[in-house]
Figure 1 (cartoon, rainbow, N blue to C red):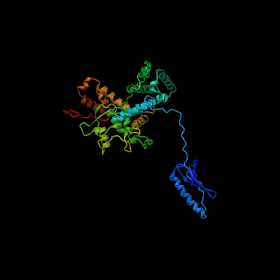
Figure 2: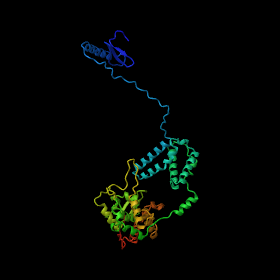
Figure 3: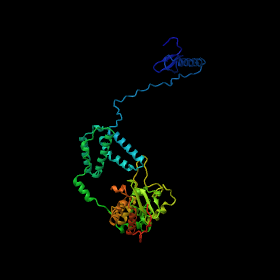
Figure 4: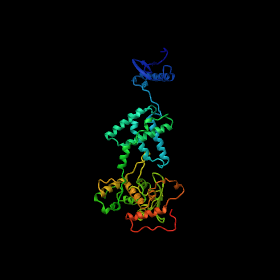
Amino acid sequence: MSANRKVNWEKRDKVWTKSYQGKRYYLGTGRGSSDRESYNLAVRRFEEIKKRVNAGQVVTSSKVIPVPQKLQKKRKSTRKKRKWNPKRVKSLISKFLKDKMSTATSSNGADLSFGRVQQLKNRLQHFLDYFGDTLLTKITASDITKWSKLNAKRVEKGEISPSTLRQDYVAVKQLFKYAYKQELINNVPRNLDDLGKMTKSQRKKQGKSKRFKFFTKNEIQLLYESCDRDSMDPKWLNRGDTEVETLQLAIIIGINTGMTQQDLCDLEVGDLYLKKRPPRVIRQRSKTGVDSNHLLWKKSVEGLKERCAGKKMRDKVFTRRDGRPMVTHSPNGFRNRSDVLGASFKRLVQRVLGEDDDRTFQSLRNTGADMCKQRMLGTEDLYLSHAEGKMSANYTKPAQRQFDTMLTYLEKDLGFIDKLQKLPRGKKTS
């Protein structure tokens, strides 16, 4: 310390100090002993303290002063940080699902449905839990075999069904195919193609168990009339679902046009041509995008006119009680499958036809298609709005007039009208 300095520098505490008449005074901090600015300030403070002490005033030593604390050095972790690698299973699945979601979003669910993306995410979850951060290039055929054996135990324990396991295998195959196209891997495990293939006995068993379920004419009429409040059990009257308001119209539209639950949810007012002669609904199927053109029955028109009153062309025909659409979108972009119509119809069937009856809303579509086929072969494809597989479809128009006639017979056969609906003559129906 320089002998000619008026105040002293404490290196440990980094403060200026000075002792006077038996007391030690703290005069402020500084950056160092060569900090002239803090030194001059400390000298002025000491001169003021010295004057006050000489005048008989009591001056505290001011020991409590702000002292800059030394920053504790962070302990460096010895664990190596993993860099993001697109070949890791976790990273690859995330990128795969994002690309699928962008495809679904850009087409608004037409090219790829939001439900399918959610299904892929669920089907790949077990594969992700098993392999985690493993590099896809390190997964060999033996690893796939071990994983498949673990899945077989899940089926034995009853955690999943064999059909669910096959869906898991299909999703994993898509993941490897995606990685191959992205040039992340050079080859695919050879035993991957064998996963999920049904054996001869399984195909034979599935063929025996698969039976199409239909409704009879009397059952359809009974279900239709049971939606009326007068015929309902009192415990069902105050339910907050669509049992009364929507279900009766959904039944008549479903058997009339062969629409599925999703088609009814997506049906817009602009798809209906109620003032046309005859009235009809012209749209594209929600699932396949194939054109459909169905003549509407009398009771269908009456119910649709009442439901479409005051709505705009792009409004949905079928909505919930609060005005929300039947199909809602979750915040993450996935489409939540609305089960309002399906659940209501299933409860109706069990209440009217028996609790052990497992026929669903799809059975209405099966019933209408079968009745069309039995009366006029070929009209079932127009009823179902299936794409025609013959080359003649590229050169000819659909037999719309014959199909309209078929729908009028179907209306009468099911008991929704006493006389056949008259079709205009000499005019082409669109």
